[in-house]
Length: 280
Image (tube, rainbow, N blue to C red; front, side):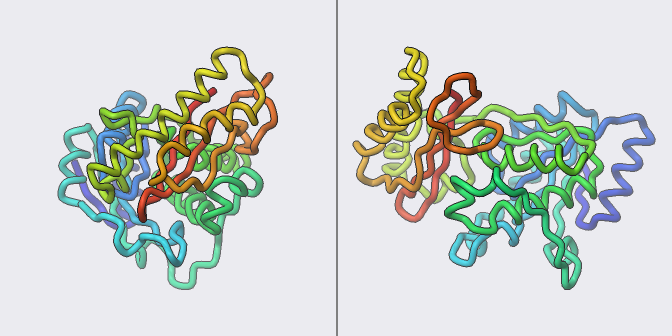
């Protein structure tokens, strides 16, 4: 497995792989890899013979009061995990090399990025869309794999790819969970053992809404209310949002009838922000 740090190095490596007749897969990450990330790499390996994993803590998707400076950097462990999962190359740029001096071009995906996390993290999805567009341009991947946990991010990227005619196939990989059902996240390492147990209330709330939907309930208010009632049983969780949304537009709905919908939840647990979602 190769490790490169600049876009010219990445493009040269990808060109060699293409000359060898290999399809190119891409798994964008910010590092601090866990089993969820490694499952994305393994999935990409099923789709493409040459898999690029980017490890880049992207400063443009963090707000001024967010955790950019303390976000875990674990490159040695990440490198070992990538190699074991079958990655062909790690692209690990420095921000000063990745973003040209005075860079002033951004990708804004209106509408789909406005609600949910977009409401509480202004500028976040602009940073996400821009860095992913740059990675697509640099890696020239045939396929890219993203996790379902970041549901709104996935919708933003799909819309960007559609609108800009970017020739990459997007694969959504199912959320990988801790043994107790909590969605795996790099930020879970901020949680104490007690908090990790408290966080199980989030998947329990989604399961309650899912059970109601399975019973035939389509009214979004009823589905949301049953989830919020479960969340309210855990006072340590500070709810940011709990919404029933259309999977394509990420807009809240009044009814799930005839639509592909999900329940999306964001909570703070202590200083840690947790998100999760489930299809309905």
